[in-house]
Image (cartoon, rainbow over all chains, first blue to last red; front, top):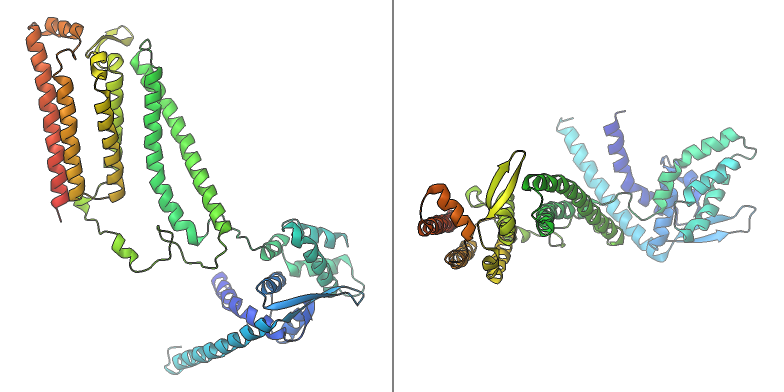
Length: 115
Length: 332
């Protein structure tokens, strides 16, 4: 794959990552469980972006975090805050709308025989 | 185990103190999650590879930008740099020349001094350029880090977000009306030169005689004491010339206002010049004697010639400057 294509794909994915992560945090998750959840849904994620992203979301008050020390290994759990839920729903709405529009656009192009 | 701790240290040492511990703890637990139960060093390496470079990871945790000056400030930074450089160059050149003239005792020959000034001047300019570049960059790097706004739009020169109204402040400059930086620079340089000549006339203006290897200054042409009687007026002319030059630099094109200001300045300068040159004692008597011998004419004629040539030359150049200013301002 060419470098240009790679960088374009990365750019395309970048915006969707936040949405994907928010969607999985309706139940509390720790870092690695989140990675597994996302990977199970076929979403490849660069872990060096995911962990900092979680921190950023926490700083933006979209998610809450808490340390669970009850098990052998302490884990930091993240879950959507009320504000985060609200934002997530709006983002989701926006994404649905956008992807429908884009789909129509791309499909229309196809039918016109451009591609 | 060793590798993991080193990795965590590599990440956290790049982070602010207060979040280090928390992130170290979380990273340790995450890495442990990713490892199989009985892991070997190869497993650790595989996991660390997935996490990627510690520098990149640490940078992800930090809010601070990884660039010195981002797109928001870059444009205005470059604009300011371009504006400040020529001004700083002129100022340092003028101060250098002035400094040399003050320290000039008249004992040394002029040519070595001039060469000295050029040498030191180059070094000074180099030094000054580095200073300007450093401080401006430092200030902007600081602003970049203090700006917490999420706005990423580049700023305009007024430090506000761009609107179409900004275009109204930029005048379309036709080529023939434009005041080039070169013109402004030349004018400032000329001011510096004649001002230096004025204040050090008894050491610079006059008759030079070559004696073998070097030029020697023998007879000053003008009477420094008489000349300096007019210093207040001359300083006013110098100040006005610098002010007008800077105003021209900012405006970037000839306008009626600049042409009028230029006229007033030229008239004023001419009056000052006439006052000085018509003073009967301004010309050094030794110099007159020297010319009398040289051309075999009387003292009265020598004076008359000098005064006439001076006045005509000055008035003609002033008139050309005034006419040129209005001509350029009129063009549309």
